[in-house]
Image (cartoon, rainbow, N blue to C red; front, top):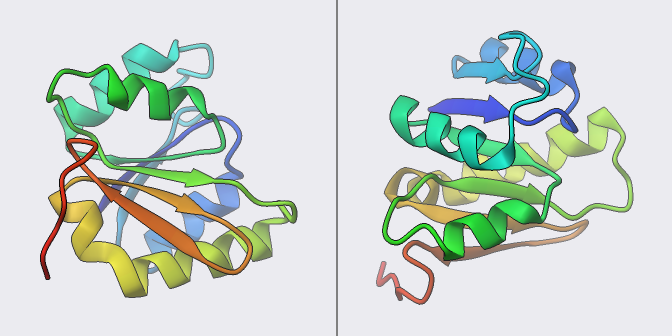
Length: 126
């Protein structure tokens, strides 16, 4: 799977994803640390990448995207230590990778994650 990490996501998460065989980039790696969220979203679409972020603005961007879809993993964690982030992301990937491939916003909380298929409002029958 291909990922694009927003600035709030520790670079060590990207390194962990690479170690697991994923194609992962961080905005910092590409010198794009000041890129506006709308352009990050467009970049993720054009490169077929899942956005990793803490930024709630991406949920609004998805809602207003008029059918353009980039999957998003939105972290809503109290414990933002890298080890916890990796643990929660590992659970998401083992349980919901198919949703990310189909197009979804996954909200990651301390003890669970919620999947919202794209476009918002679509019901997925598994």
